[in-house]
Length: 253
Image 1 (cartoon, rainbow, N blue to C red):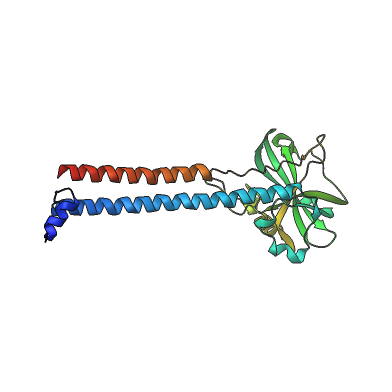
Image 2: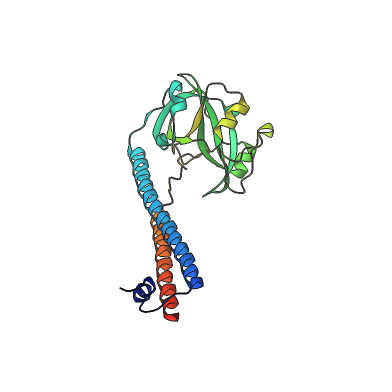
């Protein structure tokens, strides 16, 4: 009967690995398995993200294509979430023009400002309406159209931009300076009690005056497939590298 050492040599083509070599191979094997598992898991996660993003884009496309619906009543405002974003809504009320807020934004017309004006609804409550953009030189003079009296607006429901981007400036409510459409901070600074936590992007009503609505950019970056391919490719690279290391180590013996 063959001894354990003889059986080990037979399994490796008659070669016997030294203890340091076994330890080295064990470490390389552990690293390789961890790498394959890690990169493979990231690839699977990106595939799941791809399915989620594709479904999200389809849902938003359906909302954009649907007919406008009445704005939810104030009693339901706290239940509005990102699942409702980009829904076309209508609302009726009176603009509080003295309380409007201007927020800088780059645009197709050059440097510009969003004009956000609170609307006091006939049904009760206040909603910030993004009436559109105004070129910054006009915004500085305040020489743009304002609507007095009761009016009805159609636009897209948007979620508050409460979190800034990397390197973005913080708003300064005390000085009335806003660098993003952070509706909660704006309505709190204005002292509005029954205010919606979201805002509405007004649709394009006219191209002959300012502000100019209809400037909502509906674009979702969807690179999850390329990310998944990258992670799976890295897992394959690790597997191939491990096989090459294993062959090299065995040939040395």
